[in-house]
Length: 266
Image (cartoon, rainbow, N blue to C red; front, top):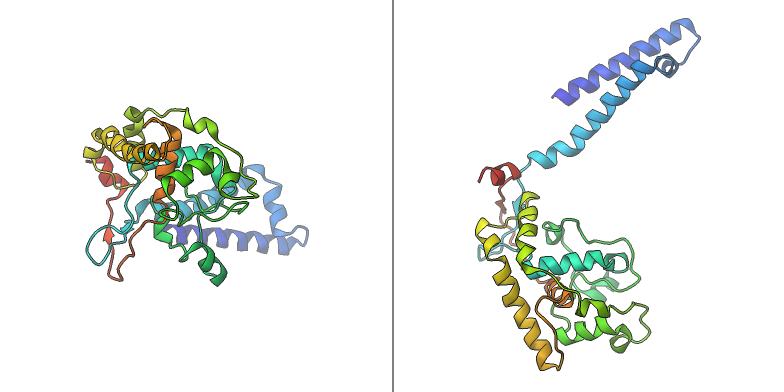
């Protein structure tokens, strides 16, 4: 209501200025404003404020709905500690520049990449990874498509797994390390942004990280690869294995997630 009233007042002021200019037959309506820097600055400021309120306020006040499955579980679960660290490796290495994570509803894309992407699949991404270019294939549903060893070889030598690939090698990810003890701080930041992590998960973050990383390390060890749990490559593989592994939401009304204000009050 306040925004509508402000817009009405603004329109009335413009109409009055136009009338005054028409009476003198000297200036157009905007000439009257442009000759008065203070009035012009005030009106520009009001326009920016009104636009900002309309754009930002709904997102701050609305209650986010979390899609649920028919079984009553959350359809799109937040990233595990390992997957969250892997997502950050993905972003920091610029993988999003060449790979999209948004399968469009075209038959050709469904045949190649799988079912079209759904909006709720990106609801916990900060920032989202839709991408804007496909130098390489879309990877929105790459999780489960290849084993751990395939991802390892692909990152170390892309052309050994995909002939003619122009993707660069990433051998340093094997030796670069992540400190799992600090992962809990990332979970706290994600919670502040609206991701529904529970406080209990913060203290268990390192333990959960190492448990999931250990599974990947075992798979790679069986393949003949010696790699540490805290390797950036392990985290990235964990993230890639997760992509697209979301359950199908039901058609019933979704459960509302706590607002940012409610989380801060915990």
